[in-house]
Structure formats: structure tokens, C-alpha cells
Image (cartoon, rainbow, N blue to C red; front, side, top):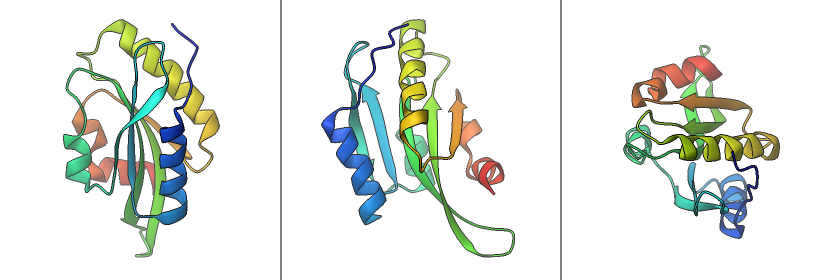
Length: 134
């Protein structure tokens, strides 16, 4: 496994944009190559369905997504999630490379207190995500 993982300047700026402006709720990162930096693939305000559609079928990705939901008491809440997307169709080298990148981000993203790994879209269903953070 390649432990040399870094964030591109674009990724750093996307996280800052997400935190400071609240204009976006999702940043999807990909490795430039197995030895390269994490670069922004998507920086957008996505619905939950659009988020699921943005996931490649056979390639891993890292996602930072702000989940909006109502608490049991009815209060509006937001929780930032760090998601490691590891589809079963991805090859082992890719999976290992993204696992190393995920480890880097768990330590760097203080606002993302909920960390998840998913291999299938149904693991990221809205109600399942809310149950994990709520």
C-alpha cells in the first residue's frame, strides 16, 4: 500500500469553501493516480439521489458530504460525513490506495466526526445515514 497521500490545493480550497460559505454540501475526491494527490472530482450542492449517482461503479472515491436531517425532536440538523466508497468491483491496488487516503482524511477533517465505508449504494441510503448520525 502506498502511504504517500496528499491533498491538492484544489481539495483544500473545496473544504474551505464547504465550511465557510455553505454553498456546497459535497466534495468528491479521486486519486490523480495511485501515487498522486487527492483532487476534486465534484464540488457541488447535491441531493441525496445525486450523491448516489455520482458514485462510480468500479472505482473508489472519497466523499465529504453534509447530511441534512431532522432530529427525533424535529430540530433541523447537519452532520458532516467522511465516506470511503470502496465498490467490490474496484481492484485491490485502488482499494488499498484509497484506504490510505481515507486514513489521512480522518485525521485532517475535524468537522467530519462520522466516518463510513461503503461498498454498495444501499449502504448509503438516506435513512441508514440518518440512523448513524442521529
